[in-house]
Length: 274
Ligand code: PMM
Image (cartoon, rainbow, N blue to C red; front, side, top):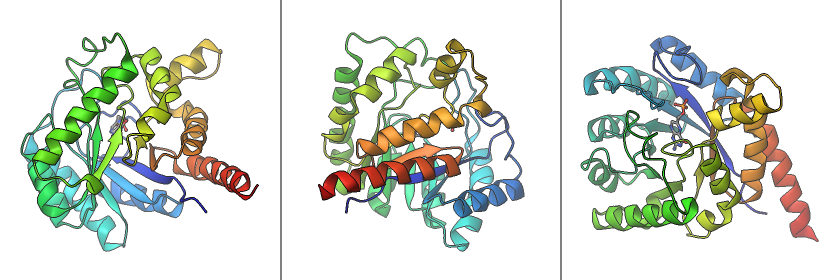
């Protein structure tokens, strides 16, 4: 039996996330939402206090800690595996001390050079995404001659730098960073070339959930395309990514991806029994 792709459910404790419009901003509401995602089958809950949507302003560090920490503490107390979506060493450190087991850094260690040392010292999993700059500049940096080749090379450079900072290879999860300095065409190319990322030998995480490229696809087909209507398309990506052997998908709607991954898993097992 092959190990199943995990589902990471998103809890954005932000007033301005593109994908869920600040619905879970209050601490109690965020905690309740995290519990709901766990009941729906999430393996990990990813708590974030800073929006990364294109054009977003950065939140102050203390504010980010105030948003994230009580939610992490409550979910850990309930026995959950908790990931924290942060680019800051201080937030990562506080979250890991509170029992989080994964740091999800969309900058892959580039935004805060002190973050890798925190992860190295505490031994958590470290999701390293491909990134070319903060939200205010990332659209301008979506320029590639060969998107897959460049993303793989830049992720390889990050892995080497992180290893030099003391992060162990087993801690590292790679993420192509869909939508981060990438337009729709770049995202589709990276998904089509997912085998190449998986072949690097680290677990892979895919974060396609409710992203604009899915909205564009649905709009072109004449379907409802606002973020809340992108969950079925997201589940389709989850099934296809699971078929490629990714470690986890990061999604807002957990139930749909849990089912999609069950389908992919049953399919793979039947293939393996042949
Ligand atoms: N995308 C967003 C936020 N965090 N983390 C990882 N590892 N990969 C992603 O693709 C990713 C992420 C942006 O979406 P959201 O804030 O609406 O969930």
